[in-house]
Length: 339
Image (cartoon, rainbow, N blue to C red; front, side):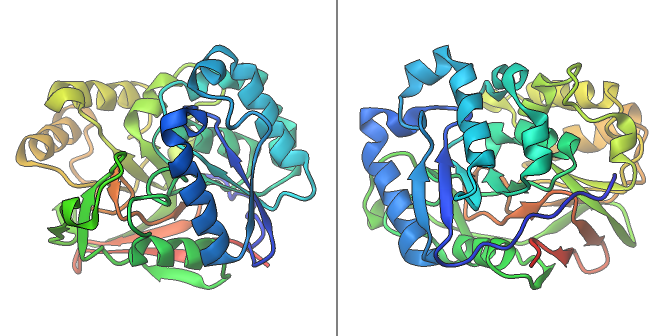
C-alpha cells in the first residue's frame, strides 16, 4: 500500500462538520434529540464547534432521493477553510450512490480528518484513492451519542488518535462491551458483557503492514468500480474486516469473503484483524482462508474493537500496524494525525 497523506491534528476551538453521506436519520424527527446529544458531547468533551453540513439534517427520504446533495455537502466540508475535520452522522447502505458526484481532487487538495464506520467503509476507499488517510471510527449518532454518556474507552481512543500527535502504540481491548443502542434507554437497561480480550485464530510470529478496511458489505458493494482498490494496493496490508452475517447467516458472510477474494484482496495480505466471532463464523473464516483464499499462513487476530458494538477504537487508514501472535497484541506504530 502506498503511504497516504496524514491530516493535521484537531485541537480545541476547531470546527467539525457533521455530515450525512450515507443514511440521513440525523434529520428525522425521532433522531433529532440524539443528534443534539452527540453535537453537545463533541463540543463539551473536546472543545470544538460542531456544525451540520447544509443538507445533513434534510432527513432520510430527501438524502436517499438526492445522493448528489450528499456529494455537495462532502465537497463543501472539504473546501470550506473554516472546517478542520468531518465526522459522519451514521452509516447506512448506499454510500456508493454518491460516488459518481465526488470531486476527488477536492479530497486530495484538502486533507482533513474524516471519520465514520459501517457503510462509511466505502469512503475509506475514496480517501485512499485520493492518497489521503481517513479514520474508521465512531459515528455521531452511535456511539458518540450513545445513551447516558460516552464510554471512557471510545473517548480515549478519539482523543489520542485525532487530538494528539502521540504514537498510538498498543491498542488495548476494552474491558466490557454492549450492543449499539438506537433507543433512548436508562442506565439500568444497558447490558454490558465482560470482554475476554483479543484472540489469535490462526498464524504465528509478528507481522506488520499498513492497515485498511472496515465492514465487508460496503466493500463488496463497490467491487468493480474505480474506487475499489486494486489487489496490489493490499500488498503488505493488515486488513481490518468485520464480516457481517445478516440474520445469523454464515453463508452470507462467506459470500462477502468470496467476493473480496475474487477481487484479489487476500492475495498479498500480511494479516487480518476482525471482530468478535462465534464458533460457526470462526470455522467459516478459517476454512475459507485455507481452502479458497489459500492463506492458511496468515495471522488473524479476533475480537478487536472496531466493529458494530460499543465501545470503539479508531483505526487510521494506511498507518503501520502490528499483530503479535505470541502475545495476542495489536499495535498502531504511528500517530493518527500530524502537526
